[in-house]
Length: 195
Image 1 (tube, rainbow, N blue to C red):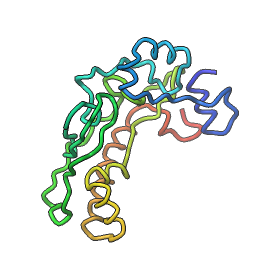
Image 2: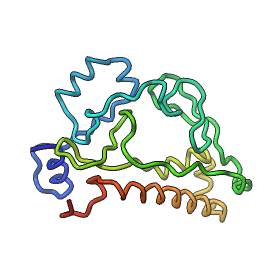
Image 3: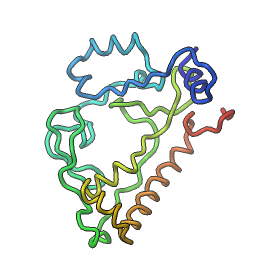
Image 4: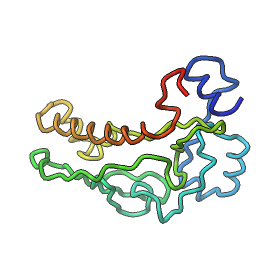
């Protein structure tokens, strides 16, 4: 059974030959174990296309994985202690909801597979070697990264008008990105019985 069929059967509860595998290998593991890890991963292939991509070069890691202090597209400052292991946000772009009107959203993100693999694959296109699941959306996590965890939890409890506007604006941002993904060929967005 090929990977695409395996995942399709799984999501439809139709008895796949085994449970689908998604490795989600941290870039730090790739850096540390190199070829030895590559050999293990090629022996135990995953079903979402990750192993058909080349590694993302270290110099192109996003801010969350680059050693040091780095800002992402949203303006969140990340502290990364070890290259390739996701850091933690240490400064947030919307610290004060009273000043939310001053916040500038990043340009809408492009859709499609990344230039190289990092953590998990997001393939598109129909191929028996993988099940293309589309993009990776983290609405809840992004809210924490915009406000800081403590402020975000207080926002949830208070339900202010400004927080509701932030929720709506982030949802609109994500929906624009999802619209771009739905124009691509990927299995994760297809109706059961569709292609």
